[in-house]
Image (tube, rainbow, N blue to C red; front, side, top):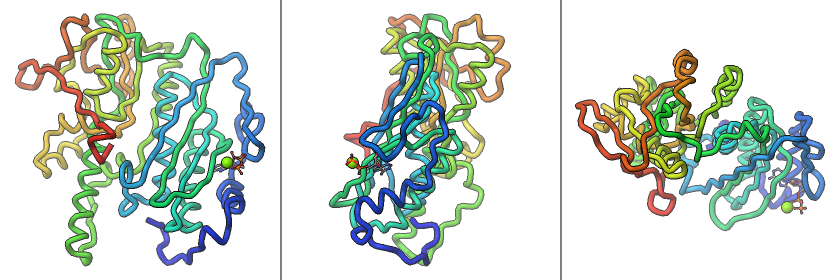
Length: 351
Ligand code: ADP
Ligand code: MG
């Protein structure tokens, strides 16, 4: 979806690969001192000094991970970067560089790609990272974007998934389930529009969940605050596939169990309201939705007083021994076993 639909468009073939790369990347300047060489040579050169390097990559495929009938291209570029940075922050590291590879069909105009890159640029500016390379190729059908992010952290500051200890407290940042409800709204409006193209979607009042779906942010602020308060989580993961499946990852890798409390799971008022409209359980959206890009981490009990005082962090339960499984105390006080539905890329279209 182009921002200005009346803009005249130019053909990819006319410009050619090198012209296109130049057009897409010439606005990016190198900012970070760890970037020795960015775009333009056979490879980028980075200097992370004495720190360890942290690398993560994600690929987004049109029709599987995004739908250009309702996702603005600028947001797509922004989100493609942010979801990647989220993985680096989840290691308690700081992202410094990204590479971006795209495969495009001739259905896309030069202007459409420039719009994606304007979103990529916005993310680079906001998160203070350098675009240092990538690859550009054609695809027979649709658009594929792959982003790799590179960051660094001192060796003793990196937080893995496997460090949770029995009795550690389980913490969640922000609120959960909103991005999933945003997706449901967009899908519903798309279906309505298909039936009757005179019906223009009315999204008033739904801005919060739509923004959570279309323009998520990575929790750099939380990583910064925890660092300033000298809190080292014992384990951490970002919430991309829903709370349930992320808790399972932490527990599996740490060889522990967990108990969480339904009434402690942070869910925004707007999420409740829209879930109600859809006749959908908001807790289910939080547990099994996805794309919230919040952080799930565990802390040692001794850090409780400090973490309790940080706004925007909810303590939702504790780590248990591996024999006790992964359970949730529901609102009615019955104890239920958590199921990891998450999003399996091979089963579910909307991962
Ligand atoms: P090579 O043939 O060595 O792969 P390319 O012509 O593909 O070189 O790329 C030239 C430069 O532009 C390299 O620095 C590469 O990393 C960068 N680049 C290519 N495509 C992109 C892209 N889509 N986004 C950002 N940088 C890119
Ligand atoms: Mg290349």
